[in-house]
Picture (tube, rainbow, N blue to C red):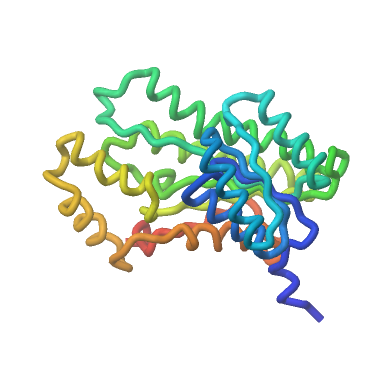
Length: 272
């Protein structure tokens, strides 16, 4: 008889969450810890990262913070080594770290385009690569696991002034599927899925709206705010807990038969 409550627990599991200092990453780390996982948060923001880890510990969870630039392969090796030495393995990776640079495509500098792809695509590739090495049954942790890549609705549809971000998040979507197929065919015990948030109440979400004003595409934030809410059937933006819950599902055994899938959390925006 299936114990459904246990299916949603992560006791004894070890998770790495990149971009874990604040926003979606911080809330996802807190969610994973709350159901039993030991969590290693990484970010380039040392102060916020350490504060988030401390808050999780204060609430009774296991959490540590390690500074990481996700575009640096040596730092990925150090993160995986830290997860194994500090907590005993690696079962879950949430590739959440990412950046957004807006601009009309004719005005975007190639260096800016490359910066977005380097962080959002190469960073995710390196995370998948080193998590696969550790999680696979002949790897350092050797017990399989779940890789969760945070993409975006911008990986599904085009948005004005988001060319670089669209390209990067679309790449994450298909990279996820490639990882899923390869891991399944080689019987690694590793699943890989993507989450596609819509507009979420975060600092990045607020900056996203402000960028439309700064680019002269709308007169003010209230105008663009109303325009986006008008095309979202729910009529409101998501909260970080909405994405954390989706990640929690993909991290647990409740989603054991899901791999290569995409979970869209956007209030119905892309369904219209």
